[in-house]
Length: 321
Image 1 (cartoon, rainbow, N blue to C red):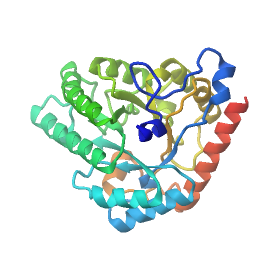
Image 2 (tube, one colour):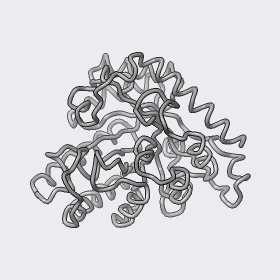
Image 3 (cartoon, rainbow, N blue to C red):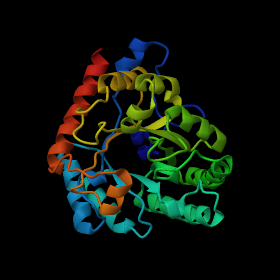
Image 4 (cartoon, helix red, strand yellow):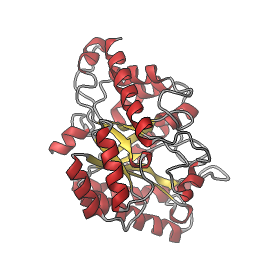
């Protein structure tokens, strides 16, 4: 219960997502905004494998840069959860997890063998999430993380829901939230906007499922990111901040002041995690999936520290506005 409180997963009737209690007036919301948020950083900012030396490197980097949460890549079903948990406990970091499915494990496929493989991967990832002591598993867990040749089919959508509903029920029994991360049209054909995710979650019909929003994707797909947050805030349970080119936070075209103002206005109190990728760190397979061809940065520590400073500055400015 304490970890759920820290992650912001208490407070909203029916969802259990913590976005605070003062909603009736904008000024009242901002008086308490960002008082409880844990700030995270994605593991791939620091390390590209889950070997113990890389886990220690990532944990030390996250702690030294001032983060509370280290978001782990959960694609490897054989990850050494005991070792990873021990290292994160040693550094006092809260674990969360995210992942994307492959074409071979796409639960929105019309090939039932592929759907079954995806279900097995997701169930294993949920088991690993529990073993890590984490309370959150998010990402593109509803389709493959890939560029599709056409739009989704209703059969594929139904297949995805048929896997995610029992997964969500099991997650609920473990006290874990599942995050649906809508991604841009070049990385999934199924859920591209926050509203898409909300409608999809309504079809799943389980309180353990929340929206995992991400400014990198929102900047491509939303008409107005701030309005998307305001309109759908009750279902947003996890939040990624990333620049339009996945480089240094605050560079690029994302309107971060309006994003943080909207988060403050709705009194969002969940995790805010910095995500950035560089070809210097990311494994070649994931680099191909995400089209990370360039080294947007070469110094993990520098990009992490500056991102933490940027988040702190934007949060403070949003509260004062």
